[in-house]
Image (cartoon, rainbow, N blue to C red; front, side, top):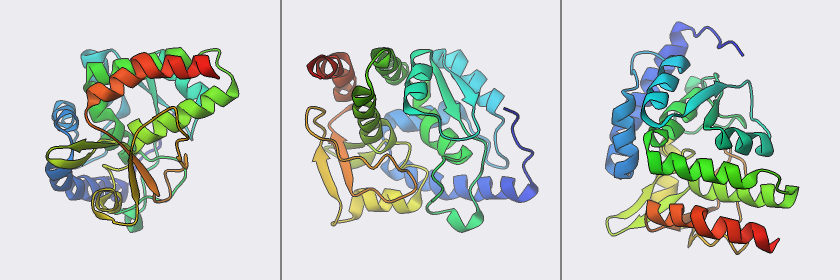
Length: 236
């Protein structure tokens, strides 16, 4: 896959997006995410080069980014995680979607600003690696359950802390609208994550989520991957 040549307006959209989101996430995101964002040192004047961000991640956690043209199938995605690789798409959203992105495939801002900060965290990436390893040779039902778990956590997860709700999901933090909805909206459901119950996850990032799943700390997420996921697989 060869990355597209970005136009001047594409770079301006990146600039406007990151300058909009930085002050918002600094108020609401977890310290783990913010530490990772600082380590990345994403450029604000232009779209960063994937090979440069990938090299930064490789130096810190041993993970690398793999360019893809669209969403990869769930089983392929978990296989990539098992090999410490993360797929990223090259598209950049339109100026009309600075607050909320509606395309089904993720864009480069979602990948770099949403996912990559926490891919600098060794415990976090180790949990994704374990999740990928556990998915190998699983049947389609398990793959679907694991996909919903990934969606409820790494994509749209919330930390329920003493300081209030702190989004950590990559589908929330790049979006002004989604952050406000996840934290403030009284109509949405926020429920404690239990992977042994039915996780109501849309598996669609281009629509507002009706349910968000909370954990009290990242240690809870890591414990679920270390213990509950393997038990869940054995039960089905």
